[in-house]
Amino acid sequence: MLTAASPLPRRPRRVLVAGVSGAGKTTLAGRIGTLLDIPHTELDSLFHGPNWLPRADFMSDVDRFTREPRWVTEWQYGTVRQMLAQRADTLVWLDFPVRVSMGRLIRRTVRRRLRGEELWNGNYEGPLWGVFTDRDHVVRWAWRTRNKLKKLVPGVAVKCPGLCVVRLGSPVEVEVWLGRLAGAVPDAGGVPHGEGKGGA
Image 1: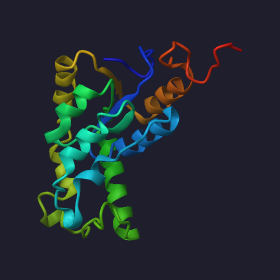
Image 2 (image 1 turned 30 degrees about the vertical axis):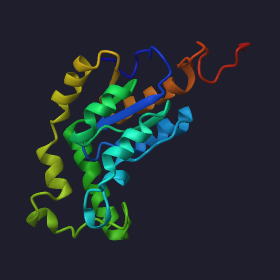
Image 3 (image 1 turned 90 degrees about the vertical axis):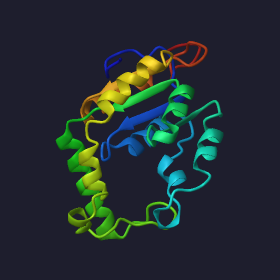
Image 4 (image 1 turned 180 degrees about the horizontal axis):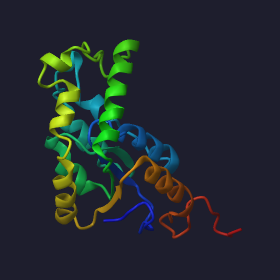
């Protein structure tokens, strides 16, 4: 398993971002997509239909976009995790301390509710008091599953030996890794991203 300081063996083209709720999976996936000029598909937007009901086309939609040569998305939803891992070449794991991810999640949840931000397909965050009454409220669910990836990620690394797994343990390490990605990852022809074939 690689770290923020480890050189990547190749320029990522099919990228997964793993992390518990609040870690910043979608934000990082979007930044990677912009940096490497590859399409970012937000998995939540494919899964959640109106009234938070799962979309019937979710699996077929995931199957379709992951057959493309270049993409980045979040590694979540048990029904498609294995498919995603088998088709990706890189998995970036945001393995942050619980206080970081939970703090981010709580701030995000409050902000979305107070601002009335629409999420996916007409859905909105529920009332804030739902954290006390709803067992599946996002904050309570995140707390229950806060350690889930500590088993899943090492397991998928064994099952998919061709998958390059990068563990980032803090937001600072994310920035370090993105900086290295921007300037030192070779493309298919062996030329570092951002350098011309003639060199400088």
